[in-house]
Image (cartoon, rainbow, N blue to C red):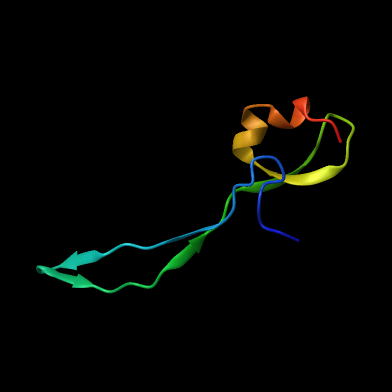
Length: 66
């Protein structure tokens, strides 16, 4: 199962920080940031898919049909 939103396609991102300590940058490991995916029904009574909470807040899942 893909870790991406079924509506907008938002997926994971790689991110990290360059930590500054006494004028030297410490190399830090990259970490993967995952989107906040939740199970929801598409179109009210459609199939359950994983969509991000941004789409849930904007009611994008209610306007789509199965």
